[in-house]
Length: 211
Image (cartoon, rainbow, N blue to C red; front, side):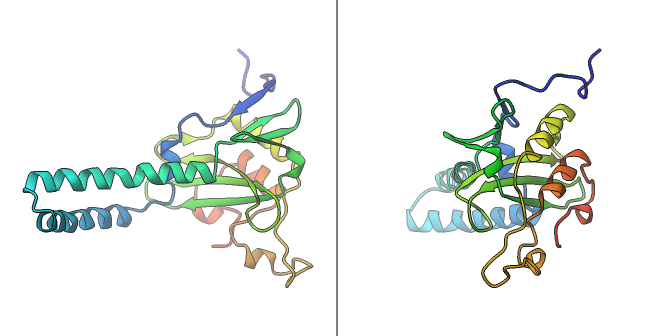
């Protein structure tokens, strides 16, 4: 039986995630959910009085409104941080319809949320000036509900990251990057990004970011 380490690297485009919905909820806390429910209860009263609706219609209207919020959030999040696709044959990255060389990827950020159920974290890659560039892509590395990125995908991602030029952002006020780590606490270097994929942490404090 061929192991993930022995499998041939893929040819053509490789997509790291197929389902977009769960990506929205990395960073959503239990408090946020409870707050939304409390607000929904208040909305029911407002809808009922303002629109002169029955209790049942008010509840239906609020449920529709509450359901629309995460759907809209999903589309906004996925539009800003599309699925990560790479082509190792051509050393290229695709973000929606934009294709650029992997060597142009120069920024990497970690978005993470600790919880009692496990660590949820994502890697955000971008190309261009500033902390987040003009071309962006994102991949979920770990989530208590969906598990970690599988070994084969991790191997492909590590290979792709090794071909980038990721570094910490350096601004005009700090041209030597002396305070880059403090100024950009969630950004990481190329070596840190590769290590993050190869040796996934299980605790929030083990992430290579300033917390």
